[in-house]
Amino acid sequence: MLPQELAVEKIVASLKEDAFVQAVFLKGSMGRGEHDAQSDVDLYCLVGEEDKKEFLARRVKHLRAYRDIILMDDIFIVAPQIIAVFDDLLHIDLFTVTKETFVGGDHFKVLYDPHLLMDEFMETQGLALSDEEYRDDVMDVGWFLFQYSKSEARGNDIWSVRMLTNVVHHLGRVLLYRYAPERAKLGLKTIERSLPKSVVSELTEILEFITPGKHARAVILISRMLDREYEWIRLQWSEESQQMKFLRRMIDQYKGQAELI
Image 1 (cartoon, rainbow, N blue to C red):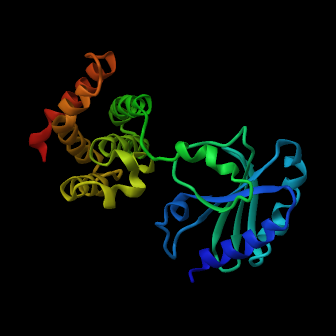
Image 2 (image 1 turned 60 degrees about the horizontal axis):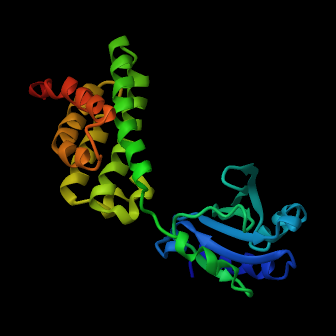
């Protein structure tokens, strides 16, 4: 049994004894059944809105049912969340949601749900991008290429690297939307297992050149990839949009430098 599985077993056993806990489920790699020895744990508790405040005060007690905690933070991103790192360096995020604040997306694995409250959320599962999210990613590819052009012109190599890193982040989601749409929200995390080997090889080469001394080569390689994919990307829009024209201009700005590499 992996440490993640043992931790979940012990913490869930504690949570089941809490009268405020209505359901417990996993998201992330464990929710999808894709975890390994390096995975973190995304553990969720469903509670009633009226019970949330009291339950939040009990969360650390439940986490300590596994082992001693050596690092902890209490934050709010999509929901109240405790980040806990245990003395064996296992990392668990414990989220607290209500029926009103449950956020769909990704797949989940139900561990405890005596009243079948999670049934109504089954249709929210999935990692596909919406059309709007896809278009936002396309827009961001062009936008961060534009920001790169400004940074590169100033000779700001470190910020140029950051801008190209942003380009690749959004480009990865665009490519997944084409080649593996059912996993696109995972982004770069799933690139190596979800994209064609030739595309993975191209992205790997690009990333090898996103450094302060070599980013000029990386942006040319990015422009080549985008030029090849452009027609497919364009056809996903209902019309020749302003955003696509902008992306085309960014591609052409660097495509013409291809003879330099």
